Structures are given as structure tokens and as C-alpha cells.
Length: 400
Image (cartoon, rainbow, N blue to C red; front, side):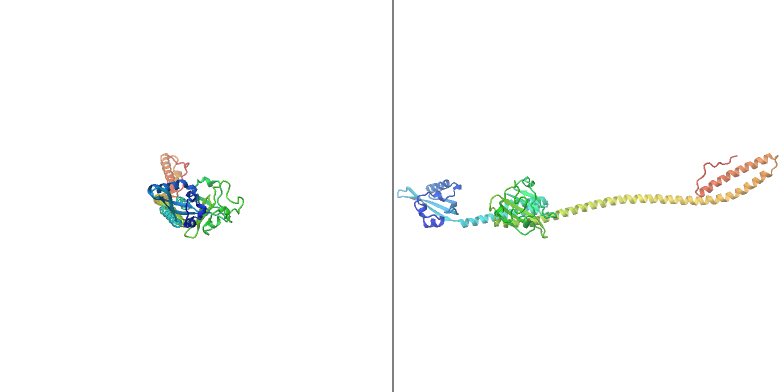
């Protein structure tokens, strides 16, 4: 360099005395291939009459600006190249505005996509996974997790539900977050917690036995957590994001995550309502099936009972008929028995008073007596039937 303006000194910080004789490579960031970039810009100036470049440029003291540069060749009277003029313009504010707008647009696209996906999803597990994945993409975190706000009687138990950015095995060997000063604000719904370096946070490492992250835990320096609060005010759980670098999260990350948590709360509430509605429908179907089975069985039971009552009624009618027959039989048997008593008495008198030589008459009277006795036995049977008494199977019947 053979010249260094006051404008260059104001923009980059170096004075003319510090820069004369040095190469312009000094203002290019070393990680960007400074020599290559400068040579490309000079080559364009030589071949096309103007070279240009845009990017981060260094300032004295380590600062950086986003600059747009133009390089114009200097020609002598013979049109020979004798040098270049470099003009640099500071576009840092414009660049930051563009980047902020681009980041805002990206965040809105992520939130819009997540909202659209959540609106179509009714499965609770998928809802929470979508939210966790979107949070990692939105914040640039290395990993994210959603913990359900399940509290045991001692207030120290939270259930891991989803992970993003790392395999589930990365957390499976570690206990769930305890109700520490770091985690409590999230699970109590007190607000967002953001720390540029959680290991330097005053709330970190206060609890026994580990006083910080367990051995083997994924490295976390930048920390960002937001509660997910239902429309009823219930703290459903918390979204937690981590990064191994310091200062990975900013206000934009926090703002975007707050919006995502709102989307998550609505989606989780809707998924819970859907689950509850499905369970109610299933219970209703089971009740309807049970009622249907009951009606079917009831119809069968009614039919059985009807047939049984019909049989009983028929049996009752038969019993009533038999009772009537028995009553009639008893009456006839009594009357017939009275007649037989007269006949038997007279035959007995006749047999006793017949002369011994009246053999023929005695035989006739004896046969008449046997007939009367058989009639008497029949009468007894009729009376037993009328009284519904069992007959004596050993009772002998007189024979002739």
C-alpha cells in the first residue's frame, strides 16, 4: 500500500504510518482465504477495469465490519498498469438488518411449518416430537428435549418424553431432572430461562451429589428452557435446549421458542382432548356392545321364562284336572264302598246261616263274597288315588 486515507483510518482503525508498505491482505479475515480473495479482486480489476468484493473485513483491535469494496486499476500515459485504487464502504448495519430479517423469516417459516404440521396431528407423542425437532431447528441448538411435568410426592420427578439432535440412549442412563434451582422455574411455569454459559450461572451446581451435569452427559454451556403451559394454566412440561458453545442463544432464539411453546401448548391440549374423545367413543362402543349383548341375552331369557311359565301353566291345569278327577273318584269310591259294606254284610250273614248240606249255595255265596272283596280292594285303590296316597305294592288282592 502506498496511500491510506483518513476515511480508511476512521473505518478500520489503523493509521497511514501503520499501513504504508503492507499488503491489503492484512484487512481480510485469515479463515476466509485472504490472499486468494485479494488476488481474485485484483485480477478482475486488471481484466475488466473494475474488481469488487464483499465480506467481513478486519479492524484494528480485532473488530470486524461487513464491507463492500471496489478496486480500480491505475494506468500511466502508455496505458500500463502502475497500481490500484481501493474504495471500501461500511455496510455492517445493512448486513445485520438483512441477516436479522433473514433469520426472522427463517424463524417464521419454521413456526408456520410446525404450526401446520401440529394442526394436522392428533397423536400426542408425534406432537411433542414435532415441537422438539422444530425447537432445535429454530434455536440452532445441538440437542433439545421435552420433559413432562410429572411430580412425585417429594416434588423431584420429571418424565423424559422426546429428544432431538441426539439418540435417546444419550439420556437413558441419566436420572430425570430434579427440582433444582435451574429446572424449577421451567417446571413451575415462571418463565423462560436463558444462560450464555450455564456452568457460570449462579443457580448451577448447587445440588448434591453431582453438583452439575453427570459424568458422560452431552456437553452443555448455552442453555435455553421454556415452560409449556396449557390453556387451563397447567404447566404441561418444559422444552430444554443445549449447545456446547457459549452464547449460542440470543433474544431471537428466546422469542421464537416462546412462540413455539404456545403452539405446543395448543397442540398438546388438542391431542389430549382427541385422546379423551377417542377413549369416550371406545367406552361408548363397549357400552353399546354390552347393551346389545344384554338385549340379546334378555330376549333369550324372556323366551326361556315364557316357555317355562307355559309349561308350568300346563302342568297346573293338568294338576287341577287330576285333582278334580281325584275328588270325583273319591266321592264315587265312598259311595261304592258303602254299597259294598251292605253286600259284604249280607253275604257274610248268608254264609254263616246256610246249612252244611247246602253246598251249592255255600259255594255261590263264597264266590259272591270274593267278588265283593275284590271290589272293596279296587275301592281302596280309588280312595288312595283320590287322597294322592301311594299304594301299598305288597297288599294282596283276594282271588277266587
